[in-house]
Length: 404
Image (cartoon, rainbow, N blue to C red):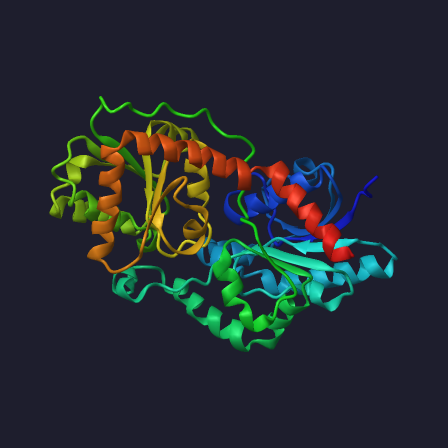
């Protein structure tokens, strides 16, 4: 009989009522706790549901996140302003646990996702796993000018590769790890200088269920309903979708639904008007979860050519509905999407990229049989890589292997 493992988990933010990394961490911890004894070291944000209520089967050691860090939500989301304090505090908690003769078979720091945060686990003699990790993707040179409207602090990611190459503290975190998980192969390439013991690919994202497969048209219905969901920033590729529509004026019934808000949206609306495709686009703005789900239910194709996407939660969401995907052949989506479930488009420049997206849309508009095949493939792909029980099984297998 396999022994139930004692696992020490570290995450700076873990909250099932939140979004993004905090939600992903909560899902990992919640699902892992069904099959292992978990001790969690984390932070609690004021006003949130108590972690003891969210994770009743987890032993929780938490501190309050400093209020000053919460005053800068966007910067805090990227830079994790409270992480230095959390690092040293977590290190003290681990030291106390071991001093009290607590035993852990393995430790795991699930987040932050970005490749810029050292782990306190490197100071202790416990086999540990880091990740899933991602990010630090550069902006393709042809798109840098159009990305100038982004917030100033997003440019801090340009220092990530320098730190990965020269920061001995950060490199030691990765080198000492028994295993590092990356969201896609590019992460392993970025960490080559750290001389990893082991590198496995695993997305930070997961699904609890798949949705009923939508009925694809049999060819009698003309047109195509495209969907783009994402934050309103240039790297998400919405401008490229709009430019692609301008190359499809000869096709009737092509419509693009857009869900999301941000500094890019006024630019995209003006561009749509300039190119004469404004009547083929519905900008829904920031909408609630039920409305987003309804858009997924209506969509024929998910068009998400994000060219600096670490992993791509919306890709997983779309595929869980059996929606074929058009995306960039880069980053996380470039790894997840293959010929069985979508179309990958090479990231070239601001002129050729939209033209190639348009070619992909045209093919799917004219070939309903291909859409059906890719729809089937999307559900198969998600059932293979994204379901939580299977993800935890892979994780427990990894834990057993690094303990040997």
